[in-house]
Amino acid sequence: MTRVFSGIQPSGELHVGNYLGAVQNWVRLQHQHECLFCIVDLHAVTQPYDVATLRQRTLDMAIGLLAAGLDPERCIVFVQSHVPEHTELNWLLNTVTPLGELERQTQFKDKAQRQESVPAGLLNYPVLQAADVLLYRASLVPVGEDQLQHLELMREIARRWNAGCLDCKRVLADNMIAALAPIRERAVKLQADPARVHATLRRGAVKARALARETMAEVRRRMGLLEGATD
Image (cartoon, rainbow, N blue to C red; front, side):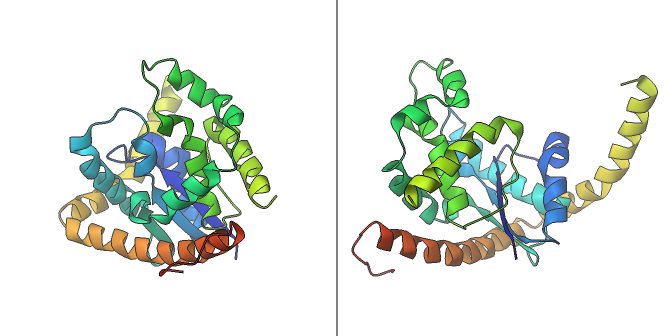
C-alpha cells in the first residue's frame, strides 16, 4: 500500500484555509493509503514564536484534525517532537546537503531578509522537511505550491543519500457553515476531554516511532555508525 506523509504547523485552532487546503484531502486519503499526519512543532520553532502558547496551539491543532475527521484507527496522527528520530535523521542529512542549495531556497531568502539575526534552523528547514518524509519512506507527499522548491531539494537530498459574485459568495458561505458545523461540534467534545487527545497523540507517536526506528537502523548502517543499545 502507498504510504503518505504530510505535516501541518501548530497554529492553533484549525481554520477554513487549513481545512480546504489540506485536511479535507487528508480525510479522503486515509481511506485509500497508509497515512501519517504530523503536527510539525519542530518546524514552528525555526522562527520567532510564543513559547507560552506553543503547547496549547499544538493541542488545539490536534483537536481540529480529529474533529475534521482524521481517524486514529485509519491513520497515524502524532506530534513531530514526540518522535526523536526526526531530529536524528535531520542531523545526518545535513552532512550530505550542500550549503549553497539551502541558501538558494526562495523561502529562506524571503524570511531571512525580514530578520536581523537569522537562525540556523531556518536555513535547515528543508532538511528537516526531507527527514520528515524520508524517515517513513513515504511515496506520496501532499504539499502546497510554496513548498515545491523544498520538495525538489528533498529529492536531491534523497539522491545524494542513496547516491466571483456576491450571490455565489453567499451560497459558498451557507455551504461552508453547514459543512463545518459537525466539525465544530466534535471539536467542542474533544476540548472537554484533553486527556483523550493526549492519549491519541501518544499512541500515534508510538506507531510512528516503530516505522522511524526501522529506517534509522538502515541509515546508521549505511553511514557506518557503530550499533548502539537501541539498534
